[in-house]
Amino acid sequence: MLLLLGIGLLGVMLGGCTDPYLPSAIQNPPRLLVVDGFINSKGATTLLLSRASNLAAPAAPPAETKARVYVEELGGPSVQLTESPAGTYTSAARTLNPAKKYRLHLTTAAGQEFATDYQPVVTTPPFDRFGWRAEPDGLKIFLATHDDANATHFYRWQYEETWESIPILIPSLEWRVPPAAPREGLFPITTRFPRICWATEKSTNIKLVNTTRLTRDAIPDYVVRALPTTSDRLHDRYSILVTQAAQSEDEFHYWELLKKNTENIGTLFDPQPVQLTGNVRCLTDPAALALGFVGVHSVEQRRLFVERSQLPFDWNIAGEYGKCVPDTVRGLSIASAFGSPDYIPISATVGGVLGIGRPCVDCRLHGTTVKPSFWP
Image (cartoon, rainbow, N blue to C red; front, side, top):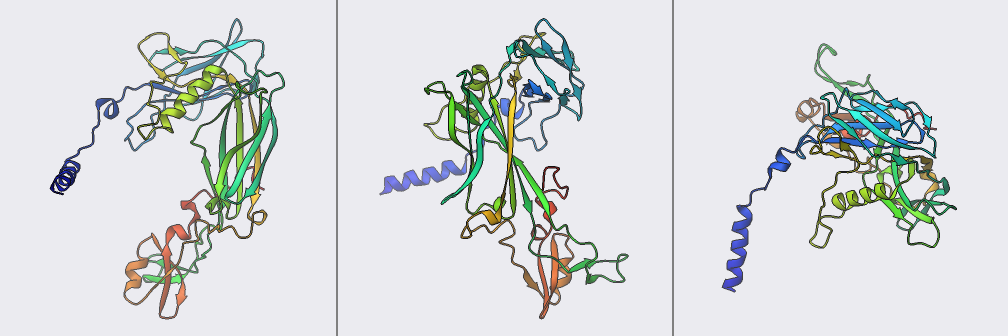
């Protein structure tokens, strides 16, 4: 018993004296060039250039600006990409020759020169099917695709979700102070909150399938996104845009390692992290590393919409505003409560005023009031 107690006390003492270990590689990482994107063989090419930064840094990684970025054809012409906004380099829409090879070639403002090897064009097959189905545990977004030539094998998907954000509570009062009002207090609302906003989020998990071990290069029913029956995103109108890309074997293995490094680490039995760079090499300094893999391929995209009325009635979709229950503020507390911009008066009630936090009435805290161009 005493031995167990001693071990327990030792554990508490050790836990209380534990300091986080932050090696220099994390506190002061090398300013590696990061290249994000691919060479689009059937459309515009967009590449994002930045520099690696401290994991704990509050700001986004610094953009790599004023670089000269080209897509080069082996034995043929090169096309320069235009920078706008800072760190984002884009070409006009083009169709590349599938019989040719292409590479990325860039020079930074500091004079460092980077390039990939010349790579063949990989053409992405179209979707065979794309849709959704309601199952007992939630909504499933599924797709199917195949390649009759049995030459694709390596697939990756990304998606972007957009959904409506519509507050339930509509304030009829507002708190005003001079000179907007003759005195400090509650008045009928004149500046109303937006009635609808749109929230958007891109996928962060990596979706990959390899068909080399299958008898046919086909994916008959792949669930690319699953949402539970309680998902806030399904409360009104929901949309998802799925991008399908076929890749070379090298590019697929790069994303496979990236997935292991970012998603499958956390226990003793998970794969251990490995050094991951990509296919971007520095021509002027072999010791200088860059992160990213720039492939050459086309993409296929499909979008769908799901209305709340199309889903089972008994799904408990409360929405992001479902937990918003106003409180009653009375007497001397009214001035101190509504004097803060984060607490909003709703309406008068018996003996007081109903109030609630701004996130329950201001959908701009959950999205944008700019209606997406694709929205019905």
